[in-house]
Length: 181
Image (cartoon, rainbow, N blue to C red):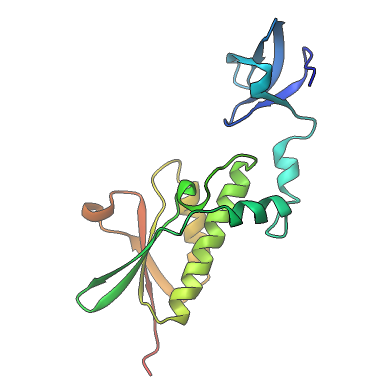
């Protein structure tokens, strides 16, 4: 790949994007949108013609790359715990628990995978008559938590912050209303 000054590039295995400003031998300087300048080797960069957000609007679960990612995932770190004769399903939504590598995935793809996992677990809990779930989402910028709450609003459930003592700030507990038969 031959990079030139002015090319838009993205850094492999990182979330940095920028414009090539200087090339000196194998060292390439890029300037990010916030004005920061970073140096990389040519092997660490990839030229981008279309912004990743533009590509993401075409991605869905039928995307072959996402299907491949889903098949590479580690065994699900879902735990069942019993407290006072009550089964609690714990689901860790950290992306590192869902896939082995986030390479070739942008933030939109990762968020969709996390929300699809949450949706499947909610529907599983409803079908198996499990009344409590705990989604461990972490603190971060709150994007996953707010999108999770938007998803939870579509179900006959109530949700609230999980026990701070047990999970810290980054978890949401879900109570599913079950009809007794």
